[in-house]
Image 1 (cartoon, rainbow over the protein chains, first blue to last red):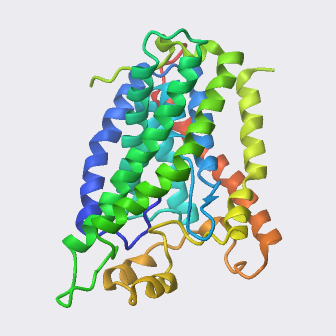
Image 2 (spheres, each protein chain N blue to C red):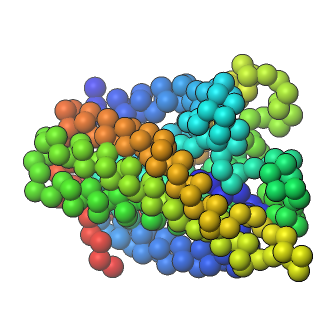
Length: 232
Length: 111
């Protein structure tokens, strides 16, 4: 899901940087107000987890690869705004040090994986786990469902961004200038593989960690612990 | 043991196991992720390399491209797995350092 340099036109790249700048500003404001000093190690762990879990490429035999992102787990434990910062750091380092995701596409990649995904996952989790006791099975299931759906929503956005490129940019002989596949190919491809496989990986990883934390540190799942201020 | 210590150990285990993310796709001949093709794959897929893509694709020279050392592309899977683990450890270290700096700047003191 890491869009490389050259796949998105300059307009799309600029647009997503422009969208993410206020998101990052608001995120740092809200995190400044809500993050407790003793939560900082957990923020670092969440970012490290997101970074390393994205290295676990899962194969579709003979087809392609994909991976979990860890953004929903971070959002459940620290709130969506803190998760946005944690995953942003992971994505920026992946682009700069490892060329995984383009530097021109950092805005778009962060929009998909560090903004859309943690927020979608967080609110799905909160909805399904509404009023459920901290140690309940419903919380584990809620985390898995939220992870599955949120990764797929992120993949849908990525597919749309890819798929719009041939419409936005093409030469007079209708050769694409950037990503060559239209919405009719890009959206089913991105969504299909995440619905089929990668979403389940995200769900499994997220639910397993939540189950582990329920047993060993249930206070982390209490909602008053989470920086859940969604307002500005 | 403190929970955070246990979680750090978990992160360490993931770093050591990370080459699975390299070896499994290789074993199952999975190819590149969708939309992350190199120039050659792109020419095979669509018959040409889009002009804008060709211009921007080499914009950034990452120090550890694709979680490997430069020039190690032909070194074989054990060497690449080693480079993958080093990349994981280095990446985690930089990410953690950056988050600690950001977290220190943003978090409420004494709580």
